[in-house]
Image 1 (cartoon, helix red, strand yellow):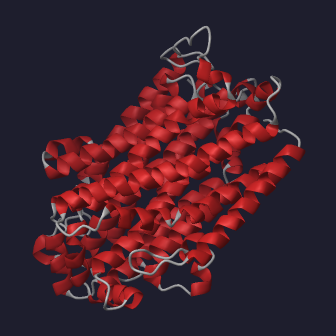
Image 2 (cartoon, rainbow, N blue to C red; image 1 turned 180 degrees about the horizontal axis):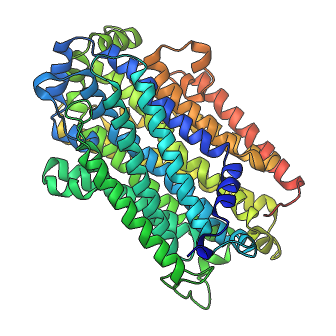
Image 3 (cartoon, rainbow, N blue to C red; image 1 turned 135 degrees about the vertical axis):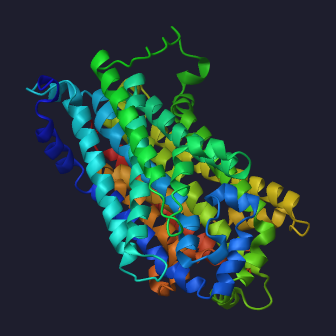
Length: 536
């Protein structure tokens, strides 16, 4: 048995060295976002009357499906409000962090041949998986401690140290379940894309199962890791039994992953890859057809995400006025933003359009970065050997991302408007919402242009695109509530877009952002055409 795990500690140090920036950014980013939301919510609902009003409102089935059931109704505190609003969503984000981490150091490294080089050294056949799981456990423990002590440091009366540590522990335990489940999928599948897709589908399935269970059948929620997280009733009863069940599920998945890893061959999955057709279809004979085939899973997954996102918010639009009227701070914030002549619903929709555009920008950046991912693995060299020009291939991926921005925005607002029309009798026409959503396309194109320029000039620095996107999300989601200076908010392209229907249309910022996007895209074309190809 010692031979199976020999060299594990050396691989642990190697993984920490490789991911010292990436993993630190994930942990610190999630912890900071979670902790900094504490004073915001505490200020929004400062009186018991406001909190009780919110408790009644959040029993709406649509809100319950979004964020989970409400506990502590008899004496609804800031802590209970915070848990109900944040815990499930932050547990999902922790799950995403663990999924990306485990796939990167297991199936992805194996697919690229890195793991074969590591196994040529005196290390055990299970050492890499053991090192990956060890670092995952360590990272989630660190995240739990940062969140627990960070929340308690604000000294909110209803958010003591024990409850805060339970909040962080529940997040970490859920993250470990998704890490171990991802490790299982990495043993079952023979390629990284399938393993990542199944892992993210497992996460989304857990959320949907919890949503259905919280509204209709609690038994379903008890099966979902995200449902168990909410059953801890943090800051209300502080139950530990859901955490123990999550840790038990983590242990079962982890043991199964090690058993499967011991049984399979290197480079293969337990489930054999399905043999492909002897000849590709006609669509695969062109760069566009190949790019669409490679991006198909990503596009379909994000179509589902934006549609679900639109349906969830559209289902609660009828409660917005009641929601804002329950907090004096929210009333002051929205009135200051739109004036007395604008309804709270119009102002909320204006903010929501911006948030939905930032979410839809994630796959747009991801699709543009696919050409760099294919280049790193050496696949684009084979395409260029057929006589395809660089400009044409670059244009295909850029055009795919460009078209995706339009389609995703359209589908998100269509699902939002259709759901809002069913739940509310005063929903504006589809054209009003469509114009408000499409207004943000130039901001999305600015992010796309930045990504294209980085692919052409400095492909190894393309993580800047995700960093800038993360900053834009922070500026949109938190910056407005935190009353950050305008010059900070102005660093995000989304800040300069007129917020319809709250504000009047202004074409100048749209034209400037569109022109800037075109310049960045042109710079990407020129730079990509001139630079050398890279691989590995």
